[in-house]
Image 1 (cartoon, rainbow, N blue to C red):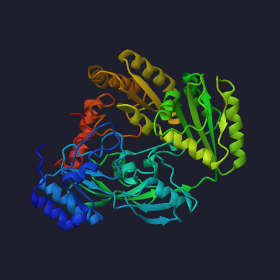
Image 2 (tube, helix red, strand yellow):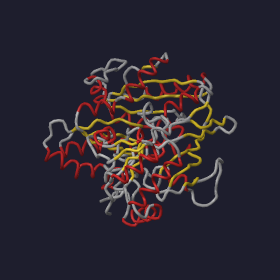
Image 3 (tube, helix red, strand yellow):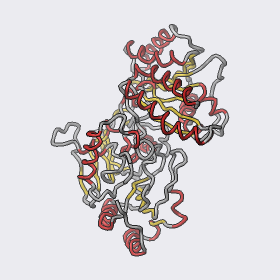
Image 4 (cartoon, rainbow, N blue to C red):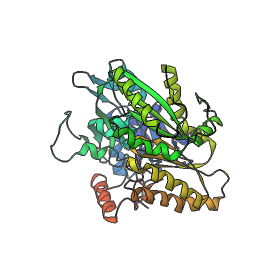
Length: 468
């Protein structure tokens, strides 16, 4: 596809439409050239900041007519390169469309704009005893629009589900500038194709989300958080299924290799609120929540009984809100710590939860084969393992071979075990050339046809998801 380079006349239109303060060019675009994905840098020719759906519509229609590629963006906290302008053009930032437009307590719904920060939304709801569960590690900075675009999850996805379970309806600007609502503000809807769920997880390739109607639930009154050290990594993976067989459904079961916490200690993110002991190899961070404190304590006792059958260290129960906060902060900082420690590749693998021990074992065997060290952590309760492959002192030749072949073997193992290549980070740029592993040529072709139907000029986030 041949795209148009931005000229003075295009900039004149953008400035006239948005105002000069909402158009960035030149050196000012550097902050919008990278996200949290490894070390990728792609500079847009201009960054635009619309403040209404109508302005987004005007910009998109203009770019479509002039064949200028558009990359929707906001907080740039993604881990797949999905919001990076691969073909330059314009980055349309939704940062200034960041409001809660309505909280409908009677219907347990909210209407929000895409630039709203996840944690800000959660905090506002908490004051009304309402709850929006999806909580990515970057919840303090990531936006709900980005969460919707990637179908983000987080620790609480185990009990409550991922973003798609809470999106009822979307206002979307299509690549030709048309504005549509994808569904209805109802909990049940069997009227035609489900365009709402098609948009969720589409990574900005089909349109720009400008409003979302979000389902809410009641906020649980109590939480109980415990940290369990294991002397065998395999056992920390195996025990997960046993927990569910006992009829316990935690709100979170997070897995952390000891190496992940050791990396935190070596960085500016050092904050391990307990002693790492020599024999310990991995940890589970388990949260229970509910409205009956007695029931939580009963379930905690059941967990203790389960862990007695495993080679565990001393179990830590967080007794105060500060202790809980420190444990969660430790877990959420692992990704940032790894990023500051070494050049790395993070793979967002996911398998059925009972296959997690096989995946973990296979990743380590593949690491031995190719000579790389990996740090693993993630959402053990739903089989979503984040595999961080470290470059450290490896040569460029070895590193290139790992990226080309080693990662492909990891993804092939995931699919063989009944899983797939991304659980919550999306495909974007970094995973697109592995899409032939989970999908046949026919499946990829079908998805490309859907993309073409929405975006025949291929201006909307081009270069993402599909293999080169």
